[in-house]
Length: 163
Ligand code: PNS
Image (cartoon, rainbow, N blue to C red; front, side, top):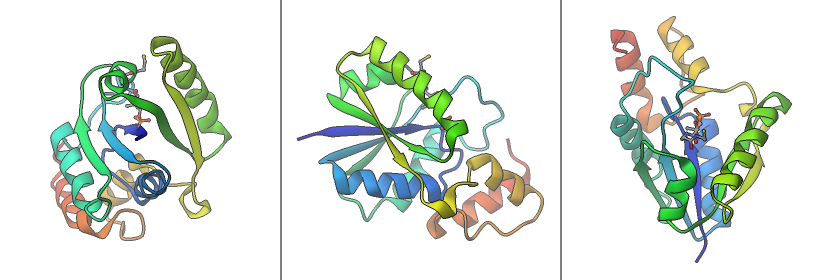
């Protein structure tokens, strides 16, 4: 049984994230979506537990997917869960440089851990959690960008201006 990890900040989950999770779920026995801490990001709209709850809500149809929150290193999280690989979505070459460095670092920290890249669907190349938050904040419609199950909660939170 092979377990892989789909890690990220997920503040909040987007259709782009969900597509990568669904494709990972079709390829591997078990998928753990890990809501982790990215020190480069600040002013989160949702707490880690809230983000995990939103992800659980839109991955209910995927029986081999579970969602966890962790505040430590991805490499250690993977070791504890006997994961063989990290799966990341790549939107563009600009993602690659950063992801390549992270992959090498994670391999150095956990030699049993591979990183697998899945290219994003073309309609999601411009999509990110930051773009969703910005559109929402400025009163735009995010229906095409986030799963329906979580849309209202995202709109409510961002319109209220809770950070
Ligand atoms: O969605 P993001 O913000 O691009 O995801 C990045 C994330 C959270 C996967 C990355 O920052 C991460 O792995 N954080 C956990 C801490 C860690 O292991 N950092 C890498 C070694 S310094």
